[in-house]
Amino acid sequence: MKKLVLLIWIILGCQAVIAQSIDEEKMNRDLEVTKNILATLMKSDSEMFFEGRNLVADYVEGYGVIITIPRHFMYFHIPPPKIAGPNIRIEGLGKGKAFIVTSEDDEETIKEKKQAMEEAREAEEEAMAELETEVKEYEKEIEAEMENWGENVMEQHEKFEEAMITFLADYADLIGQLKPEDKILINQESPYKVYNFAWVGPGKSTEKPEISNLSMEVSKKDISAFKGGEISIEEFKNRINIRTKEPEEKRADLEMFASIFKQYYSPKLTRTYFTEGTPTYEVLDNFGAIFRIKTYSSYAEGKLFYMPVLGEGKVDSEERKSTIEKLYPEFENDIKNFVIDYGRTIRSLEDDDMLVLKISMTRCEDCSIPKSMEVMVKMDVLKQFDQQKLSREKALAAITVKKDFNGSND
Image 1 (cartoon, rainbow, N blue to C red):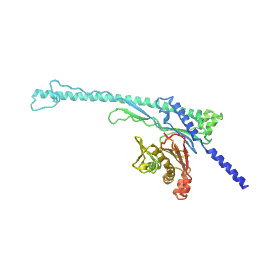
Image 2 (cartoon, rainbow, N blue to C red):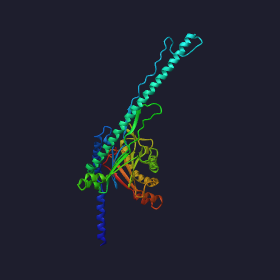
Image 3 (cartoon, rainbow, N blue to C red):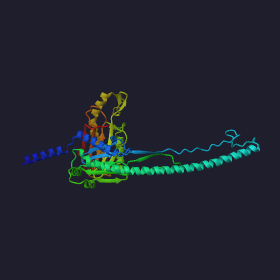
Image 4 (cartoon, rainbow, N blue to C red):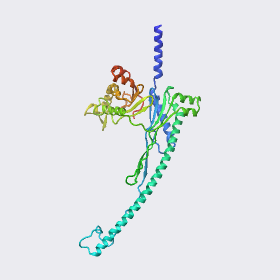
């Protein structure tokens, strides 16, 4: 009987492993295809939109798919008004001497110079009045242009919202392998930040506030229900969680964690690969925080490479490849220990939230290292380790590392 129970558990365990396994290559292909579809839907209605390759699409185990539409910009330019200053010419007087009275001047010359000064003053006052009028007209022109711009932005914002709904209804199911409880999130970062190139005079400004973030989230099971004819398009739209909100203020603890990572894996301190720039992150309700990180291994110097971890020496491409492959096991072990040691500094996430590091690995042609890796741990594990309720060994064992050898690290 015990053997039968054990066999059943083994079978169930194998089934669970099979059910949880993801074909990374197919998932990456599906994400690339659907990412371009979404970009096309949004771009078709707007000449202001960015190129589709700027979208970011990730599969996160335990959550689903996150598609991020990055912040993009518009440039608002009105040339300055052409205002010519007064051109005052006093006949009979040398250049530069019109307003200078000397002891050699006779009474008539002094009278002419005083008259010239008065004419110049009147001309200057008249020119300044003209300038003030021109500036006021110019400001009205800018206000009208900005109003038109605002109307166009709101119109495009509505079209983007329609395009996102169309994508979720008609194309999101092309992302295979998702479980019914998985979600698809489209997160549009604050769009249409304006860069103004308009001269409006001293103390004036043409700043335009940003449009709020727009995000849409729907579960795979709701997509399947709509595609299978179980619910109408109206009901499907009702099940989409649409949120419009102002950009969230940066969280001090998450900013600190990102800063620590940048310092820890800086070229000067790294023992393996390094990073440049501070990792970006986003916080997802009822899931946790995802940090996106890019790692490097070397700087190209002609046909040779400088690898900070090796010191001052330079290596060729074969030596670089060999070093990268040797460093990978140490990097994987080191990143897990980094998460245990420094992830516990995060206080704003709940116990059930996840801390996720999406790491794009250093480029290395034909190397045996993954193209990317995903490091995940539950915040409760980090908090228990911080409170000395969990050993380092058990905390490390609770970290999940998922490797992708077929994706892209561009």
